[in-house]
Length: 408
Ligand SMILES: *Cc1c(COP(=O)(O)O)cnc(C)c1O
Image (cartoon, rainbow, N blue to C red; front, side, top):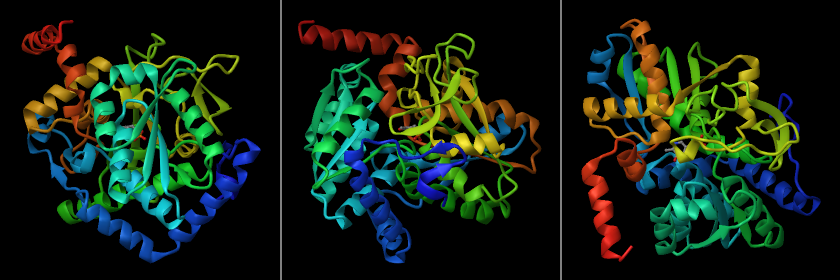
């Protein structure tokens, strides 16, 4: 690994001096567990007994027939405990925090999925837990707030800035500065200062390790292409990492929102709107204006709505190793409907970005080719957004009735 977490010009550690010792301690602890086979064993054991590892690789027979091109396989991260790949990261960091003797964990959360995953891990391992969440997101994501609180976490609404994910990250760092001794910060994606990008990717690499083996076992060969959606980049790096040295094309799919030319999107690498900068402790492509003010992002998928991107992905893009594309909200809803009807699978809105791009390309590939789509999570959580997008009349009546019951 390169010194101090640089990937080309990206990454690094841009933190207040007071946190230097904490970051050094974390980097050291991570190095230690990486070279300890017992740690990975313990990690695998908990993932197979508490979550659902190995997750299956499902052959999408009906979608394959529908498109008439490549054989389509789906890696089922939706079957993890709490419904997404986020479990891989939080359980890994939880075990690490235990080894470091910490008694409390904190996390940032946007849509609330990482917050719920962290609160779940904290309940399981007996940590105290505080989750920072932008006030806007607290209002929008009540079901996740409800579950975090049931799980025993304290949810603190962040009223700074635009009151969304990036503000929650800043607040979590502020907490960490004052509580370094007993607290571990469970960062939710492969972003932030070193060692987080590497560490989160390391825990997520279990996805790719399994998928590569499963592909060889099922079809006797590797996929031609692998697709993953990209928010911060953790599920993408998780599945891509196992194929980096193979002749396999890797495709990261960002949120094109209402279209890349509308300004209402969250695409840092596939659009021309991202630029290199330093923020939130690391250097990467951000959606920012000329003064370095972060722009507002837009996506139908709350989990892809982040201004930065993993420095590791920025580096692979620069080297030409990973191709970046973007799918619009309406392409994503179409891909989601088709997947539900054809396969009985409900991908998360985030994951459906990977499906949308794969569907654009599958017909052009031959039946000898395999493509692999990472279903990063399940879509049940998105029922409010999806029902609204499809203007489902029964759902609307149901919500109205509930409102009336509460005297709204
Ligand atoms: C959080 C989330 C994402 C985006 O995060 P990455 O770090 O880019 O993987 C994607 N899919 C689902 C289901 C999520 O919950």
